[in-house]
Image 1 (cartoon, helix red, strand yellow):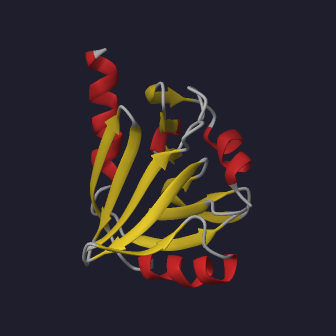
Image 2 (image 1 turned 135 degrees about the vertical axis):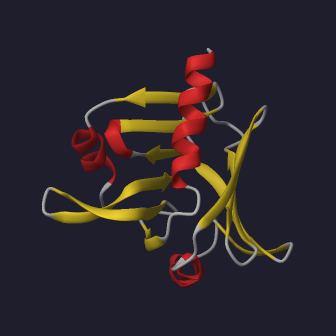
Image 3 (image 1 turned 90 degrees about the horizontal axis):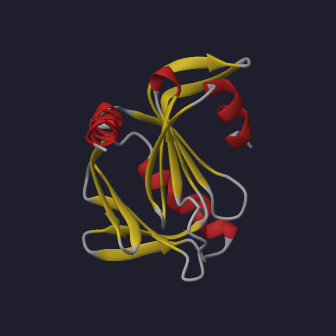
Length: 159
């Protein structure tokens, strides 16, 4: 268990301070973020760290005010997610009961992710793809650290 915790901490620490150079609204209210060095994956530039927000309720908070959330119209969400552009991720807070995470960005901008009320135990809220094929994810059953084929997993999340 300690090895898993150390591995999760190492992956999470690696993304902190990395520049965000791409944020995209995907299917529905899914959001993807690319941080750090650009690497090529099947002819497409992706970040050394790739965060995929999905299967959760989320809110964007600035200066303690909700400025957007996952249930808004696509048009509003496309404009709202642009506020993340160019900001580095400064802090990540994770809680497991209930499953939730707060991603804090430079400039007092936060993304708060919470499990759906009716989420299954293995329904991941987000996945963070990191160098060396490491993947950290959060589900109601807990935080997971995996290592699998980076390109196979990446293809699954590219829209």
